[in-house]
Each structure stands twice: as structure tokens, then as C-alpha cells.
Image 1 (spheres, rainbow, N blue to C red):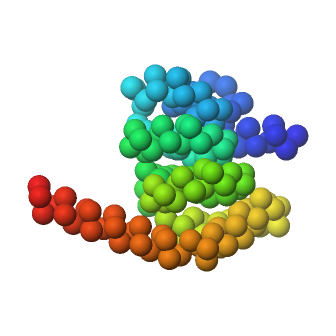
Image 2: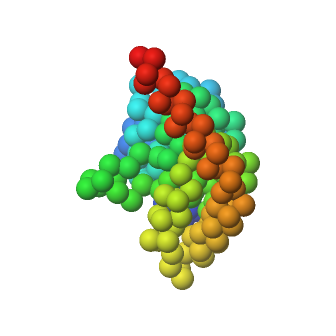
Image 3: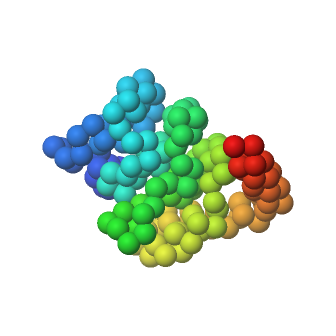
Length: 170
């Protein structure tokens, strides 16, 4: 039942709604890179369906190759969040990876610029005794923040300098 409940939460068993975007989420979750590539021709890579972006779905499924593909195609490593809209509850890719314990995906997202503080904030807002996976994910994210703080700060500084240089050159 736990697997079925998770699939329903991901929208994987809900028939008839979401169209090709739902198919994109499914393909990303299961690591079907060929289908992901085909569907990206018609779908917004950062648009959520049923609380997940394609990247969040791939992260939840622990599909490293799909995560890399989506990031290379321009997926936002922090997910798509539009404040004040029905999408406020979108689950961040980093949080989804932490929920599943997918360490290689977590590292890839951090390397791509995922904001660990945003993921921690979201996890804190969703911790509940009925969702032990969220508590475990929050603990893991806090551990990672402590472990990775120096490297993440240096990487963020490099990205900011690169962005500034690109602005000056354009």
C-alpha cells in the first residue's frame, strides 16, 4: 500500500488528467530518458504537475541520469515556485531526493546549485508524525548543510562572480 500511495501522490496512477505533462513526470520518475527527451519538445521543463516538476519527479525516483539530462536541458535545480499561486506547495527536487535517500542525486543537485536552505525550510514546514520520511529527509538535509557548508559557499561565490562577469560582457 505504501508504494501505491506514493504513486498516487506522484500522480502516477491518476488516469485522464495532465496529458503529456503527466507523461513527462512519469517518464522522469522511472528514468525513461528517451521519452523525457521527446516530451520536452512540447512541455515546459520547469512546469509542475501534481506538486512536482519533471526534475522533482526524477529526484524522487532516484534517477541520476534523468536528473543530469533535465539539468543539462535547463531544469531549475530548485524547482518551480510561484508564490501566491496554487503551486506554492511544489516539492523541491533536493527535498524529493532526500526523502528517497538518493545520495548521488542529492550531490548532483547541490553541484547544480540547489539551495539547501530552501529545501530545509520546506521540509520544516511539512514535518508531521504521519510522514516519517519528511523527518528523515529534514535530518539528512541538516547533516548535509553542515558537511557541505564550506564547499557550497565557495561554489555559490564562483557562480555569482561568473554571473557578474557575463552581465558585464553582454
